[in-house]
Length: 265
Image (cartoon, rainbow, N blue to C red; front, side, top):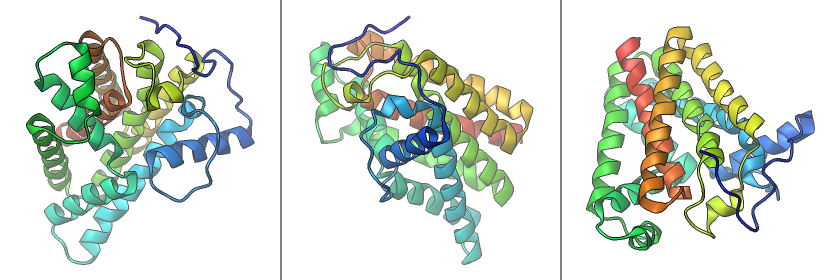
């Protein structure tokens, strides 16, 4: 299904520039949104930088792996190092996607119509469903990373998970309508169709580089299925997607890919 355009959103079908200076600006735009690093701000709509979402994700995964190695270096166990990696990633990203996951879970747990569910997602407090979702997802991440244990395997899992989880987001942004007429998702715009598929391919490429072709295929299919399910449920419940839906998709894809590494490595 193709999303309907909305007033005030950037022109989605303008073909993006792939020149080097444009790619650097795209990377800075993605980095400034997905992390809390003090990078120079740009006035570029987020959707125009969608091609480099997987690159920013791979960078975040690399930082997470560095936290894990740091834990081992100072004498932590694999379990404690995994906790450090997950906690360090949350600090690096400002828990941006974790917040989306919590709001998405609370939306699923509340009774009421579309407006009631949207109001719950916008509420700054976290309910019991959101709390449980955060606990279970982060416990799964920690347990999976500790089970992998070897730094090389943890590195591959984290880079693939973060690259794929962000590389699939343009598919949701492109394919589903917006649930609100305001908010971060509206200002982000919708990526060009060419950029959407290029981001998917780039995320799969990162997974292949760090995990091999078998893991890349399985993890990419799993990531796409999770993204579709999260977005489809949101479309039925809310009439479209929000920034919180994107955050929930990122978190659920991330943990799915890490679990794929545990089962396939």
